[in-house]
Image 1: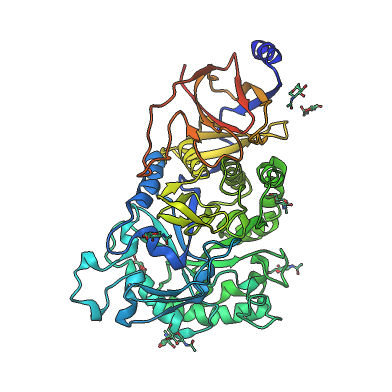
Image 2: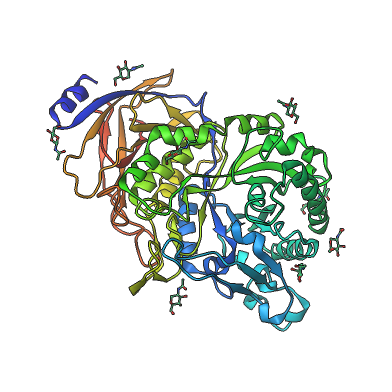
Length: 537
Ligand SMILES: *[C@@H]1O[C@H](CO)[C@@H](O)[C@H](O)[C@H]1NC(C)=O
Ligand SMILES: *[C@@H]1O[C@H](CO)[C@@H](O)[C@H](O)[C@H]1NC(C)=O
Ligand SMILES: *[C@@H]1O[C@H](CO)[C@@H](O)[C@H](O)[C@H]1NC(C)=O
Ligand SMILES: *[C@@H]1O[C@H](CO)[C@@H](O)[C@H](O)[C@H]1NC(C)=O
Ligand SMILES: *[C@@H]1O[C@H](CO)[C@@H](O)[C@H](O)[C@H]1NC(C)=O
Ligand SMILES: *[C@@H]1O[C@H](CO)[C@@H](O)[C@H](O)[C@H]1NC(C)=O
Ligand SMILES: *[C@@H]1O[C@H](CO)[C@@H](O)[C@H](O)[C@H]1NC(C)=O
Ligand SMILES: *[C@@H]1O[C@H](CO)[C@@H](O)[C@H](O)[C@H]1NC(C)=O
């Protein structure tokens, strides 16, 4: 430890901190490999999945994560366009017919305002299409990796029982005969707390009216889906915000109005909350630093603690069913940058510590905050201008956050995987320890001080490690670094020397070999994340 401090004192712009890591998992929180999952804007779902054949770029990016954890990211298909979707059997809508508003500089890739989904959008096992061979039927969910759990949104905004009935039939049918892909949840309505603002309901729509209406429509949905007593496949709430109060939109509000005592309410096992850190249609360096900052990440998430406690007190699970950095599909030059990868990683990992079991990061074709851009883009995601040459499918920097989380959580689900935030007395450094069974396996540190293009002094923080617990403490570790040129870079990020910025979304390059010792500690430059893997010697 002394050696580390001496070394640090010789480096320019370096500060040193001491971090103590428990060797045992006593206080750690159980976590799945798909902690960082995806929410997909429903209108262009078929662009993600592929229709008659799969989108291999998208499936490669998902399979990269499966390789690291054994768990496929869960996928929610829904959001804004969920409440604008109708269903028709007409052959013209075998897949889907949509109306898109014009692209604008602040909204280069707007959601469809009218969607008529046909059998092929969900599945094509309809009598009209018996002549189409099963392989050509566009059962889109079949292209997801084996083991993927899917949440699918049903239109509640339209208050049309026939649409609820037909969509539910089609969704449930889409999972018949799929071996390894399952329907985790049906979601009835997206952000109903905003219906009073977006004219889907009267301006005085309240949580009591919502609960009564929801019960009526969800009764039909659960009967149509054939849910039985052991099913828990309805997702509750999915509100944009929360009042945290019984009398208005919040988990507490629907509980107080008796949702769980209703017939469809018995199928709710999980409450979903949506959250963005703010809404900014233009970006700046200051905004990126705000996003990355440890204290704002913690204050954004901690405000939901009362809701999480109220949910868990009833024996229910709590997740973020839709989230990302800033609404407006992301802030340009902020949400699409490498700094946002550090935000996403700290945000998801901190969430586990307060009881958020999974986060679905929202994605849409051409949205600024995407992890993945799965199709060729012809317009700029930043301002909608025509691109001189089309941009092929690619990952954005935040994808690396999902890779790091997956790798740190690991694949040892048999032993049990858990994560613990370690106490770090530094406003820029966050730290997490990862356990397999009761053994410390890895640690991740994030330096969220933004180092921008044009800056010269890159500070670095030296970390000295010590351990508590009765097991023998490690003396060495291997190191992987998320190397970022500048916080506002949008590409050329590497993880352990390797890149996912490839034409097919698969990893490329040789791994960088770096070892360290506990005696020397580790340096972490501004705008970087590191993962230490502890060996047995
Ligand atoms: C209700 O939904 C059905 C099926 O999506 C659609 O055909 C019908 O036009 C809708 N009715 C209204 C009044 O919008
Ligand atoms: C659900 O609603 C549809 C459309 O109104 C109706 O045809 C169907 O019978 C209803 N199902 C149940 C179980 O009530
Ligand atoms: C309930 O439904 C599930 C899936 O739909 C099925 O696997 C299970 O056997 C059913 N249970 C009963 C008691 O019917
Ligand atoms: C909120 O509602 C719950 C029942 O869901 C009740 O136990 C609690 O006392 C209520 N809280 C307030 C402040 O009224
Ligand atoms: C959430 O984070 C943003 C910065 O990204 C900050 O401006 C905002 O105040 C935070 N909100 C809360 C409730 O802490
Ligand atoms: C970009 O243009 C190509 C070629 O016309 C087309 O295949 C692709 O769908 C377009 N991308 C989007 C997102 O519309
Ligand atoms: C945290 O660090 C500050 C200096 O940055 C120091 O004054 C303070 O004593 C430290 N607190 C603890 C609990 O170590
Ligand atoms: C770099 O850091 C040194 C020492 O803290 C300081 O004197 C100098 O002004 C800094 N330069 C820039 C460009 O920030």
